[in-house]
Image (cartoon, rainbow, N blue to C red; front, side):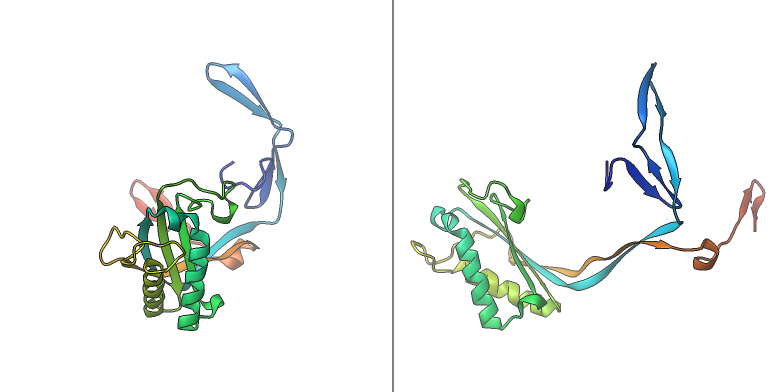
Length: 207
């Protein structure tokens, strides 16, 4: 099932394995007889995979144990985002500014089926991707500082709302890539690629 879009049809170069009528029979001694699978011919294809650069990343990792902040964390992060975008005149489409909350929805994100949290502490990963490393650094710095000193309702301490495990707190992660090509291409082997056939023998290589 790993990386398969369909459990019954397994595509490959020049054909697909049809397992609709496949059966498995235990023949003893740890052996299994598999029958009924059918290979269906298709145009010969190769899988193309490629990636492209999308910007530069800067990260900051922090934690909070303030129950007042935790109770209103979604609204606080929204207001911090608005403040940073306004102060730096950021076009939302040109920059990725994300907060991952470990202890709340750090793994599943918006798909998390348990949106409410009873965690006494949260880990906050601030993730910025921008067109240049300098821009990512600046945005991460301002977002981290704004969140650190954000004046949310009920706040008691004014020295800072976050605990940082590292100093300096901001981490350059460099160039970021994303999938840009994931495609099956029909082709004729003799045209698309150059072949070189070699026969390897005990005496050496015979081209």
